[in-house]
Image (tube, rainbow, N blue to C red; front, top):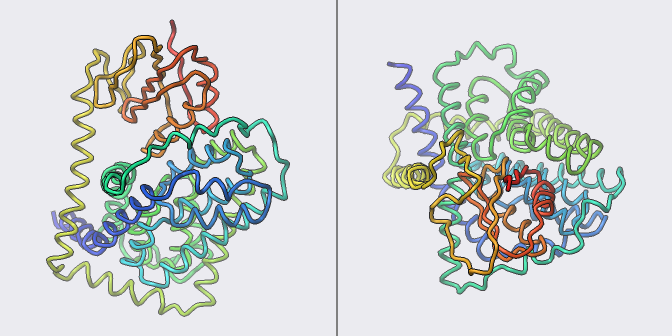
Amino acid sequence: MESVLNILQAVVGIVNEMSPYLLLGFLLAGIMHAFIPDGWYMRFLSGNTVRSVVNAAIFGVPLPLCSCGVIPTAMSLRREGASKGAVVSFLIATPQTGVDSIFATYSLMGLPFAVVRPIAALFTAIIGGTFVNFGGEETEDTVSTDSSRVYSEQPHLSFADRCLEALKFGFIEMMEDIGKWLVVGLIVAGLITALVPDEFFAIFKDNTSLSMLLVLAISVPMYICATGSIPIAVALMMKGLTPGAALVMLMAGPACNVASILVINKVLGKKTLLLYLAAIIGGSVLFGFGIDHLLPREWFIEHLSNTLACCHDVAGWFEWLCTGILVLLLLNVLRMRLQHKSACGCEHHHEGGHCHCHDHVCETENKHEVTSVAEIRTYTIKGMSCNHCRTNTEKVIRTVKGVESVKVDLQSGIATVTGSDIDDAAVKEAVESIGFSLEIPSK
């Protein structure tokens, strides 16, 4: 019982410390999403040049895309004409940071970490993208020459509508995307803090090389978002791992995982994948050693001590208010998921959150009216895990000839496509080009 209370105390202390900055980060992420059109980024990413790589890194650092959502977004940019180097640069920079995770890093780890983290992401992205642009051949078969419709169908919204869209994206869609992984990160951090004895990591204490090997072995294959990795890195530092090793966790954890490795290998090729992994691992280790051996240790340890003390202090009313809002947003996501399952009108069962019905559309809020002359096709798409996945899937299906409208339901994986003379093979090819799989129902 005492262990459970210690875990809860550690988790609540970390949440109270992070919640004000998380909410601010989500708000800024929503504003970026609502007021910066997708096509604005694309104009600067074409061309097999260093400039396109640098632009991709600069655009990717503040974007609030999770580790899974960045994959279809990057593949869509590739279809639009972005060079391989720009795509890899975007893939490296984006999942490591984001306005929400930068604010959260500052709240728990202090200003030095909050500054070094995006700089390291920017540097490794530029290096990795440049190596890919000049170290591999550009292939034409992966680039679409007729996909301008992807960004041309964006609605013209009023200022008030854009503000509502910003709030919806920041506090509903983003919470839906990273909420689970944020909770996982907090629980893991609480478990490490409360249950792992200090002497367990004695062999790694102040040993940069061993600490980095441990962190790389943990972080490279697993999925963890940029924000969710922060409490885990803090907990590991409290147990003796070096600040440099913590930075490796913050960089390699979000940027490398099995899903991204498989998709990059499939879409961009094995050589590009090797350069991508080398840039992330090499860059994170380089900056990790730099923190441990070139910068004053007090910069990174002082705030950690304050964070540890704050976990035992009584939080103020503002921190508790922000924590309450954060909990309500998480509960709202849970309610939406449960509501979707209960509202599904199909007679088939659900497995793993996916509706296995192919002959009709689940009767949810995604149902829409179509004209009597339009043809309706439904497909099952596998591999989507966030709203960015859904959005990019809808965009890429719209590029298929004959498609008039698309609605993809994230929870069931069902895509409802309306149009005339729709080519199933073309829809399948478009979806697979951004890393997902599509099942064509038997007629």
